[in-house]
Amino acid sequence: MKFLIFCVAFWCGATLALPQSELIRRPVSDHRIVGGFQTAIQTFPYQVSLMRSGTHICGGSIISSKWVLTAAHCTNGYTANYFAVRVGSSNKMIGGAIVGIKTIIQHENFNRFTIDFDYALLELEHTLPRTKKIQSIALPKQGANLPDNVKLLVSGWGDTRSNTESKVILRAATVLHINHDICNGAYAEFGGITDQMICAGYLAQGGRDSCQGDSGGPLAGNGTLYGVVSWGYDCASPGYPGVYAKVSAIRTWIGAKTGI
Image 1 (cartoon, rainbow, N blue to C red):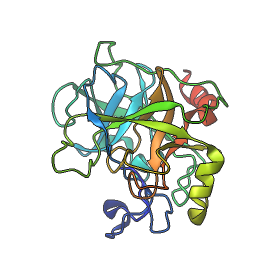
Image 2: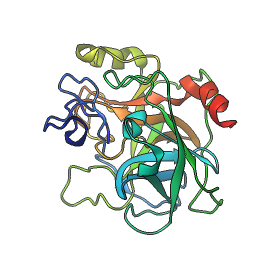
Image 3: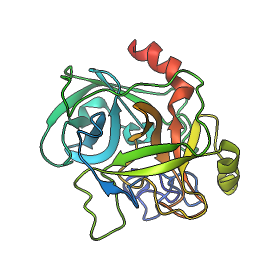
């Protein structure tokens, strides 16, 4: 769920949707793919559906045969037995394989109010096979930075804000990496963004973004995972690009916890 800036109902017990998320864009974590296109899991074989109690709630990325990276706000407050991932399916409700979660390693510095350090590692109960529909994605080097305006892809099964676009079949959107200082200014009223965050979208016109249900999913380019869908103000709104947890900021942490 992309953290919307208004409290997400299931998370806060209110009707406001917080981070991409809280009423002050305290970040909101509730995302959907808006302005994108329908696609197939073969194109995004690293994409998983994260389910809680059997229902899709977030996305995630396969980073090895035993590990998935998602957002901490997707797992916060729950133990591993509540979760499983569906892999190898374009449909979030059927197909592929369902694999249980053995362990959740949430980043120690995760802050549910600022949505900083929004990372969670999921250790799978079973090793994943490598197929055309199930593959891991490469990780960037620690501290690596993206050029401004580089094209990236965000994918997931989140809200599309369209009655004609299915939320059941995987969708994706092309977005542009937004300069850190510019994005920080765009979110100044909400406290700005941190060094553990990157932004992507279309600043002036909006129109394409992740949204509710996409949280935890991948922001990728050239076969590398650069971001984790995290939060933002509304979805695809002009002036407010999507905010993602920056993977290169915690590459060393991932290695220390998983051996990858």
